[in-house]
Image (cartoon, rainbow, N blue to C red; front, side, top):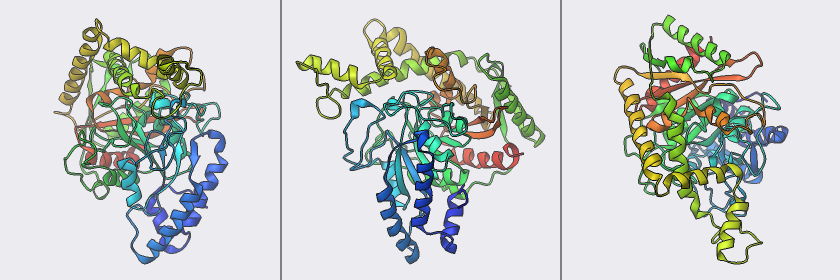
Length: 477
């Protein structure tokens, strides 16, 4: 069976009778079995997916199927799905079963997408390599000893190895965009508040976004269009109109693009990533687009600001996991206090415990003003400076990640080295802006390189149409 890169191709084959929904699900289940060693999925809903496929085929035959009929998708193990396990790839939620379904997942199911499994990820979405999971690391399909990026590494690999067509990940500081870059696929973070976070396990509530990993811009646009919009269960979601993204993907005219000199000269930027980025800039110039270099003076502050604020929010959000009501409880506890201590010590992994401790420290009396309050002020400056760029420009374009996929266990000894993998993605997260990672060739070892496009507030439609233009006229040539 041929590789499916878009929903339109699947629906065309179903309409022509080349394949039916059951055969389609079996195709993806076959790939899941074939690539089981990559550890991208922690749970496969084979029987459920096949049963849904039979129902869907009947709806298609009757002409009553939804807009996502034929889309096989997976969800990151941080989303609720009623009656199914939710573990956030952590021991602390061992045995927990969701009591309701996340809004973004439900909206896809309502349009007849078929959920085929749950993806491995970094524990509680904290990581840049998908090595921090109680289920073990995920492996990049392009290299048996390479990480897929994180924290949505399992989602990225599932799309990369065609275990599904689309996957719902989460993006707090680049957790959809960076693994998309490492795996050679598309990864999008919409504007903060564009998609309801109801049913998404919280890491850092003022940063967390529902994100998408896909093989085409068309599928990204259609899925976002269906997931986005107001939700009575999430008071932070925007009430701005959701535009018909999938119908407005034709970019016309030229764009004004900003890029940062201090990113291209950054000591952590791999030379091959830099070269690929510069080639893209030159192609854009040759097509008549204007590119202006900017000096983003806050580059050295984005990572410290991000990690101070997210660890502070994580320490608060993760305080609910204590062994009292649900999940893992230590068997060696002898009183209430020891139950709390032992349960959390045994239930959380090292990276999560590290971030909880850092967050508790920056929120503590005597350090709150020195760290947390100051970081909030710097975040505001970063957002203001970024928005100022958009007064004169349509987009900011920069590398998604400073390197290509690194080897497993190669960054574990130096946490700073791992955190630096997020240096180019956290700006959009701090500013709450929509951003997307697109494939931009490969390095000499055949490892994918990503390029990132950031748009102004709630300009997802503009971002998606320009992204399709890039893929068709710039990145593919």
